[in-house]
Length: 372
Ligand SMILES: Cc1ncc(COP(=O)(O)O)c(C=O)c1O
Image 1 (cartoon, protein in one colour):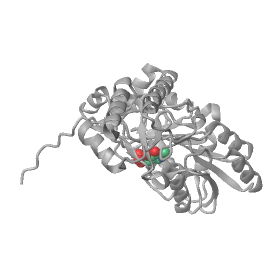
Image 2 (tube, rainbow, N blue to C red; image 1 turned 135 degrees about the horizontal axis):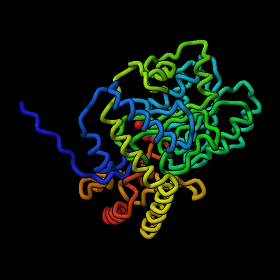
Image 3 (tube, rainbow, N blue to C red; image 1 turned 30 degrees about the vertical axis):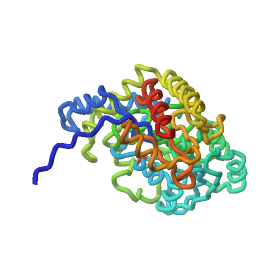
Image 4 (cartoon, rainbow, N blue to C red; image 1 turned 90 degrees about the vertical axis):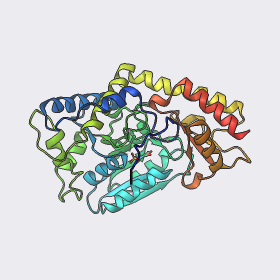
């Protein structure tokens, strides 16, 4: 049997990720593969680290992409920082907070959970009350940009609480990095992970992470080995660490890293602040267009994510059929609601390269057509 070449259609990706990847990044990825210990590739690794430090706003030496998607960055943070018996306070107001709880449990930790309703922000007062009542909590973990609900949690305030109560912080920045402000050093974040496929507009499959000095000290002074060999930062440091001499740990995804480098160059050329402004004004344009169609936004304006717009599905519209029609007739992908919000909302991504006027106009016109 002959297998035909797979030629994907040219979709407009305006769901919760992956987002559109520019031709420039795709071209970079198609360049010749070289060895992952080639001196030229080692130089490229250093450039990637420097650009990630720029994107995260940090001088953390342990800043690098994990060779796997955002979920692996999440696991890397929990597997390295949580030891059996450790108490971790997790803020849950969506799917990805729930996954953090799963990670704590699988690392043998004790999860203390604060829940807030889906669509609202984590309540900082509840966090403070819990941290002051339970001084043995070692880590505070939360999702900065909850992709399942479109809510921005107040990372700066939560990290301030972690410091006040002498906890380490683990922050999920998968959807926030490059789309809204993330300030690792300024906010005192100890461990953070992101994803390549959201506002960085790179291909999926890489997870930038950064660990600050307190986190590195915690990893180096563990009394039990990290249960994941692949994600053990003590070992990865020998490969992604400082200096020209690198020890083989695993074969890095060379071409995906070319793509990440190119997408980070694009972010640097635009400038972080300009990228945040572009997401903000893209959101405002989408808001205006959808409001004209009487479509309401689900999340309060005060903590709404510009890069992930959650809207109530208009009354009488069949969710699955409408999204299928958008895909088939307009080549437009938007996201369905998850968990508590399934069947009630759509999630419209304006992430990275996808956040541009042409896409927003196309999205508004296509939705208008479909709901008519
Ligand atoms: C907030 C958040 N955390 C973690 C992940 C997991 O990332 P990945 O799907 O790349 O493994 C996602 C993916 O959508 C996410 O939105």
